[in-house]
Structure formats: C-alpha cells, structure tokens
Length: 154
Length: 154
DNA sequence: ATCAATGCAAAGGTTTTGCAAAAAT
DNA sequence: ATTTTTGCAAAACCTTTGCATTGAT
Image (cartoon, rainbow over the protein chains, first blue to last red):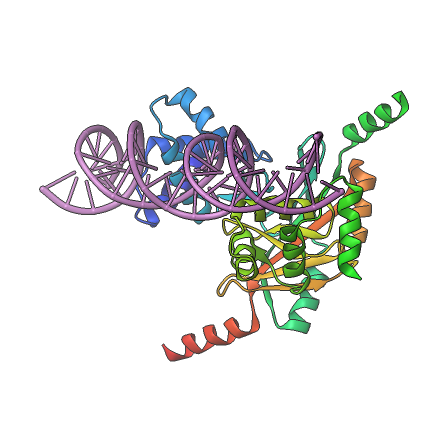
C-alpha cells in the first residue's frame, strides 16, 4: 500500500510520521496530473484538518520534493506549483507542459524527444544533463475556437 | 541605427522617449547572452543615472518585453531575469538554457529540435504552439571536474 | 524523556502601486 | 498645456523563519 511506502521513506530519513504529512500526501496522490499551489493544498487540507497552518504546507511539500514524491514546477505566474511525479509515475524525466496563454490551463504530455538534444549538448559543451524541463506556450483548442469566433463577430 | 528603431517603436505605441528607457535599452544591448535581474540592471543604470529608481527599472523592462526587445526568463531562483532576444537576434523561438546545479551558471544554446515535437502536439491535442522554453539542468564541464577531484581526494 | 513538527505571527524577499513632482510631446 | 513618466515610499505578494507548544518516537 502506497501510504506505508511513504511512512518508510520518512522513517528512513529520520523524519516523523504526522497526520499533516499523510494528509498532504493523500491530497497529492488523489490528484495526479494537477498542478497545485501551496494555497490550493492548504485549502484542501483545511477541509480535513481545519487547524493546519500554511507554513506546514510549505514545509511538507519541501519534504515531498526531497523524497521525489512530488515535483515543484513553475509556470511563471507568481507561485510555485506541485504535482505528483517522481517515483510515482516513472515520468520524472519525460514530463512536459503546454500552457495556454489565454485561459492559463496547463496540459501535460510525455515525450523523450530531447534525448538527442541532450547528447549533442554533452558532446559540444561538456554539460552533463541530469534533468530537463520543456514548456510550450500557445493556445489550446478551446481558446483557438473562441478567438476565431471573436474574429468572425467583428 | 539601433536606438532610432527603438524610439520609433516607442512612439508607435504612444509611449515617450525618456533617458531612463534609452539607458536600460543600452544596458541590455551591450550585454547579449547575459541574464540580468532587475537589481542587476538597476545597479548598472545608477552608474550613469544615480537618481534612477528601481520601480522605473521594473516598469521599463516590462515595456521592453512588450516590444519584444528583451525576453523575461526565470531560473527559479527567486527573481526574474531579462535578456536581449526577440527581434534583435532572431533567436526568439530557438533559444534555450542549460543551468548548472552546482555553480548556477547558465549556458545558452540554439536549437530547433522541438519542431517535430510541436507538430505532434498540434496534431494530437490541437494545441497551437507560439513559443517554447527548454531548460536543461545538470553539471557544467568545470563543476564535473571539481566534483571528480573531490571524489578522488576522499 | 527526547527530539522533531506544528501553528501562529512576524519577517523576508522580490515586484507592484499610489501619488506628487518632473519631463516629454 | 496636456499627458506620460519618474522617484519615492508604502503596499502587495508569496514564501520562510523564530519560537513556544504540541505531538511522535
């Protein structure tokens, strides 16, 4: 069971198993593919644990990132976001994002098309790649449609 | 001449040509390939214009971004950075970064290997890509050498 | 009993904003 | 003369930290 694995990971690092940590794990585990801010997690957590503090959320996501249970990502809108990743989905190295410039929605996709690029970088500049991040900006299908209609309406 | 083009861009948008704007443009234009924070630009600007305010830097870089003279990039270290790009170097769509996890230096490189990826994204999810950003994390040549030596020393 | 984790509030850092004075058109 | 831009200070914002209390081992 998922939760026991997590408890062992905590113990192995000398960290304690707390209700708050289990709750945040649960919140993240229930939402694969979502990109939650600390505030998002805080609001969800308060439903089950009204006395929880925002600082605890920040400290807990840091623990989860250190344990590679979740990944920290940024879409440059002012706050850090967290998503299930790492060990969980084996997608750690090949998980990318397409961000709609109009509605702000984020679409995830997989791909390992960067392998050749990384090899080239290694060869030419001696840079050893350990991880990568790809963000595509543009317009999603829905927004393209809306924008076309706005165009027609004029 | 470069500066005249910029002045026309400002006028065309109904914006005024000011010493501060010309100064920030000059600072950026003299440093292609560098990734300056607002504070960096502020410090450089004060040398020629001691009375300039940090708020002016922030407002000016926003203008330059809107005019596609510079690009805003983030290496997730807490502050936004700005670099010459856009029209200037025609590299807008194919300019990427390799960030060393040890020394923090950023290496830029060009590449259009994402074209096929973007086409695939467009075909499968109907997402129209207008821009993209690739960040590689890893270790630069120098740091690899240092880390090897540290290993040997033990 | 010991040591880590929590919650709260305060502080931290970057970036934004309000406003009167200054500068550009 | 009008309108934008500036500089300053204050505010806003997300995030981190200090510390006494609570909770886990």
